[in-house]
Length: 68
Image (cartoon, helix red, strand yellow):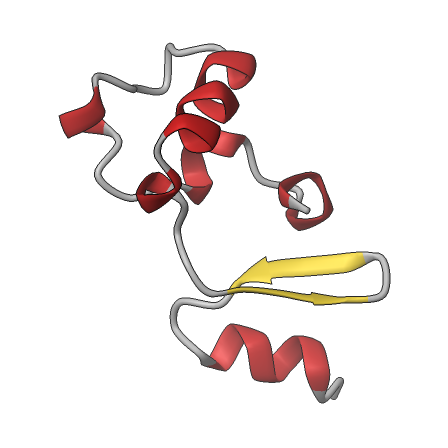
């Protein structure tokens, strides 16, 4: 689902620095950390078809669900 956002996995985290993650951490290592500790995953992630967004602020979800 993160791939559908078009973001690097590190951009879909919260508290990454406290978990020892940074921009230099490989995508695979970030995903491994997310699987180990799901609290690292930024939420909500809204998925519609082939697209997804990290819906913070919620306006991003509305823009995905209700196209202009």
